[in-house]
Image 1 (cartoon, rainbow, N blue to C red):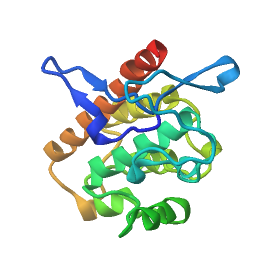
Image 2 (image 1 turned 180 degrees about the horizontal axis):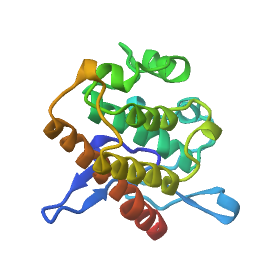
Image 3 (image 1 turned 180 degrees about the vertical axis):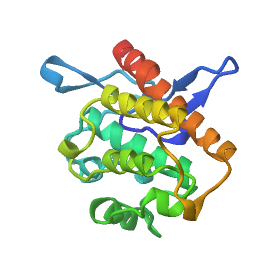
Length: 197
């Protein structure tokens, strides 16, 4: 997709999560090599050109390097971070300083900012935000499986919030639904939409 961000994720009236704006999307060609798509914006990109929304770019995208689906996993991690903490993981006063933060800085720990989340949720998001694509989840399916496992552990009572940051269970229920919504995006909307392209 190459431009995953909150503005491109919508929920329809019937509760379906949809990913929009495939203006920068590339289809996976033979052997996983990107092929430019005929997009409504008619925008074509090439190696060495930075395209996308700065705050949600992966490091490789910010440097104008070739990207694959793992770049979208980084962008999704950025969205998850923002959803669970109320702030973006990488910030700067300008686009260039934000890119510098994406390339060099490590974001604050999610459970440190939001103690209502179990540490495992923070670990999932941290792995999405790994600078090295090889250290991220290698497929959206792997990430979905982790989120479903976290949900099962929460439902079974295996995960409890640290006593220092204890909050009512109702608060965590809200975050659980957020993770379920993202899991739905990964499992259904993204593969179908990209497959369509």
